[in-house]
Length: 469
Image 1 (cartoon, one colour):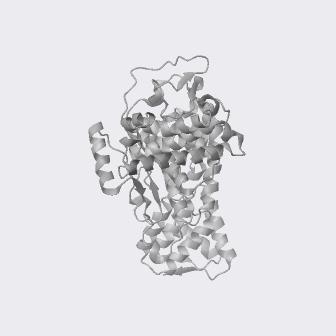
Image 2: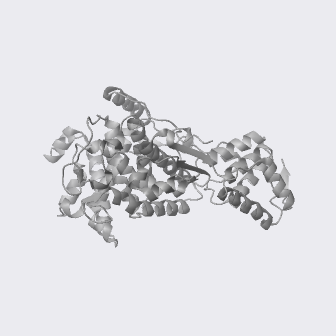
Image 3: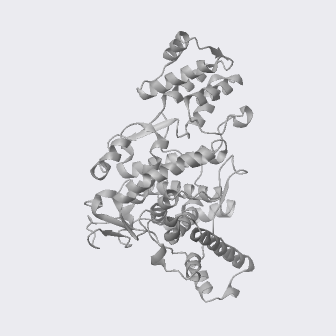
């Protein structure tokens, strides 16, 4: 059974404890997110935000108050925003042009999440390559089909490694693969009231890639109560929002997480295909924000503070970063004209609309991006983050005890074969191996758990050769 809470949940810190922890991490590693075992391949830089004093000096044009290096870094940060903003304005997609300010904010919020939450060493060996990957050339790609899975265990078997060692390598790979594990909410007691159709879907076990879009679109909603006094929530027929008091207080991490969570879905929904560094920045901030919301709110009342989600509207995130605001002002544009939700180009949107409108395009983005990176470590990390984040979101919405995880029939069957030092003979006709793949798919659709006996008996009847290693 996979551990959906891996790699960890975040402990609670006082503000002073948190800032010391972050300072210690930055002193040792700098402002970069790295993945153990992949640091030469994937490194995500983190912007150092301007301090209150720097913002005052920048606005007053007191540039002599900055060191030469810091002034250079700030100008570079601004130029990066300007280039991005102009590219959005020049986009052929009208939803990008009309809402460029809100989309810029989503990128700012992601960087803020990385700086506030990510610079704490919030990566784990879960994101390192599967054991023995270099030695046995275990493919980095995702396991899209049962036939693909059988091919991979054939490669493992060919190495003549001990059965348990091969099994561990396989399970390390399938543990992050969104086509190899499945999950569900056993009883979506909160979701079923507002999203009965979607709640019904996620109460059935299915592979994690199939519910990523819903998990991402739900992100802005699960942390909704954190923002109640900040002003971006209102009733559809009026500004007053009735809540059950008292509203809990939340730490710096949780508040930052909610900002990123609210704006993240915008980025994915419009299908922006940009530099991998930016895409991974957005995905890592999504994972961090859902982890922080889950860790910071799981013992609090959450959605129960609101009587009826159907009546609530959320305001699109607006720029707060001084550099982003300057870029927009210099282009002569008003925030009200470019800060809406992409699906309606309006500043406010019903909470239910956000979930319903954004889940499908977010899902499409996931599938397209993973198809592009099916054979590299970028796809590996992207898939890990997206799958885990989805179930942190679900657990925040419905409670940890309502989450159920399992491996697919194909994943289990391959693990059983490797543990018993067996694999399909790759020299036999491809149609034979496809027969076994089809049977695994059939068992999955019928919720049948494979055993060594059932696999062996089917292979014997179908004349499929299994090699002992």
